[in-house]
Every structure is written in C-alpha cells, then in structure tokens.
Image (cartoon, rainbow, N blue to C red; front, side):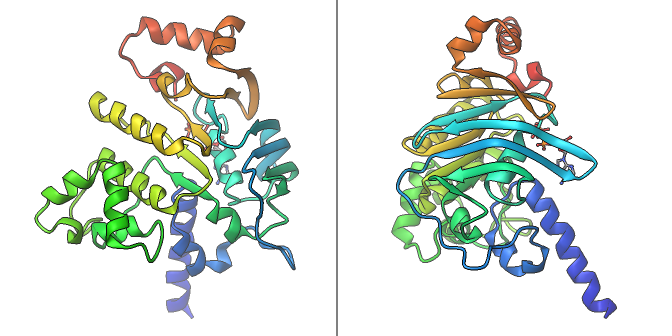
Amino acid sequence: MIQLYIPLNFLGVLYREIKQSLTDLDKMFTLMEKEREVADRPGAQPLAGDDWSVRFEHVNFAYEPARQILHDVSFEIPAGKTVAVVGPSGSGKSTLARLLYRFYDVQEGHIRIAGSDIRDVTQASVRQAIGIVPQDTVLFNDTVEYNIAYGRPGATRAEVEEAARSARIHGFIESTPRGYQTMVGERGLKLSGGEKQRVAIARTLLKDPPILIFDEATSALDSANERAIQAELKSVAQHKTTLVIAHRLSTVVDAHEILVMEAGRIIERGTHQQLLAHGGRYADMWALQQSAEGEKFADVMGM
Ligand code: ATP
C-alpha cells in the first residue's frame, strides 16, 4: 500500500507542477487520469467548427473558494487574431491560459471555442485544438527527433526536419554529433532556453493547431536570440487564434487587442495606439520603457 502510495503521490506533485508551468505533456494526463480536476460530461462530443474564435464571457474563477482570482473577465480573440495579456506578477495572466486549456473549470461565466462552451465538449478535443509554447519547455530524456515528433505522433523524419528548419533549430541539431538522434533532457545534451523554446515551436508547427498559447519567457535570452524567437513565434502565429502572455512591449504592439490585467481584473484594453492615446497604466509603462532604453518590458512592469 505504502509502496503504491508514494509514487502516485509523487506523480500528483509532478502533475501539479507541470500544470502550473503550462507544459504540454498530454502523456501526463493519460498517466494521471485520476488527478484531473475536470471531467467530460456524459455524452460530450468533440469540439467542432471552422471558426476558431475564443471567447471569455464574464468569467469568475477561484482556485480555492476563499480567494477569488478572476473577476468578471470578458474578451474575444477573433479567429486568426492575436490578443496579448500584460500585467504584474500574480495578476492572473497564466490563469487565463490554464482555463482556456481546461486545466480547471470556471465557476461563473463561459469560455467558448468556436462558439461551444468548453465544458460541453471533450477535453481531448479542446487540447487537440490548442498548441502551447510554454516559458520553459520540458524535454523528454529521448532523442531530439522524438522530442519534436511528440507534437504529432507518427510524423515522418522529413516532417520533423521541416518543422525544425522553420523553427530555426535544424542547423544546431545537425551540428551535434548524432544529429536528430542526439539524446536531450536531464540525462542528455542540455539545451539553452532559446534552443528549448525552438524545440517547442517545432513541436507546435508539427501539431499545427488552430489555437495557440504563447507564454513568453521572462528569463533573459540574449537580445539577438530574443528577436529571432519573436520573429519565429510571429510566423507560427500567422492565421492562428493566439493568446500571448507577454512580457515585452515589442511582442504586443501588433496585437488585435491588448488586455492590461491587475488583481484578476482587466483594467484597460485596446490596441497599442488606443492605449497610448488613453494615457493610463499602459501608456505609463510604455513611457517608462522608452526612458529605460534596452530594458525589458518585464522589468518595467515588475513582472
Ligand atoms: P506571473 O506573471 O508571475 O506568471 P500571472 O499574472 O500569470 O503571474 P497567475 O499565475 O495567473 O498570475 O496567478 C494569479 C493568482 O492566482 C496569484 O495570486 C497566484 O498566487 C494564484 N494561483 C496561481 N495558481 C494557483 C493554484 N494552483 N492554487 C492557488 N492559487 C493559485
């Protein structure tokens, strides 16, 4: 009994950490079916539709009953557009992403994808429709090829290479002694933050989902790497419905809408130009960033 309990408990802890860091390890869900906090309704059908819009309607959410985290959050990401969320640490940005991926169910309001409330359709189909590029990609102790192909099990080597080329990691992979057969992860070749994000981008390119969640890295990449990753993310996001948790102003300027969050509420919203003209919190942050040239948005935002 004890022997069984310990590993299960360990898996539970691991699962919570993974869920927290928004990592896309669907394998874990299968392993830890019991740990799921949300379940399919009897007779739930797969998500269907060709308009991949995302809508939050008056969403209220608390992880624990005593402490409400999101307060009446409403916004829409029209199909193929990008909405960026900015705000200080703890304001609820990642919570939006966790709810969209249906790690938790909302207590009030609705989250809709293609018009369907995500509680009414199968979780598997919601997760199939969403690709996550997390801040910190977890790599399996396996080959580079496996780690990329994980985006679409059954992908051919040629498809894996094509995705790696688009994510601009092919050259690096080829330069390692065993190429795509190089072992990575904890027990293999350690990749830098930028290289890991590229692997995540390659995975997502292979999966080719209609909806994307980008959790932009707060950790410092050198600026050349950072610009390159942003360019790659931008090309991946083209024509996809995208939610970006942004830490840099350069990422948000082109967004269809920017949501400024504070303590679980949207306190300002609009395009970059509208928010500058409004002269509120966002405009202050922008001015601060301009004066602190070269500084990261994250630093200015206290994120
Ligand atoms: P950051 O920029 O630091 O990642 P964030 O804006 O993404 O922050 P969230 O991670 O969404 O913030 O957290 C919002 C609030 O919810 C925080 O006060 C946090 O402590 C709380 N919270 C987050 N995850 C949980 C959880 N699993 N259980 C209880 N409270 C949580």
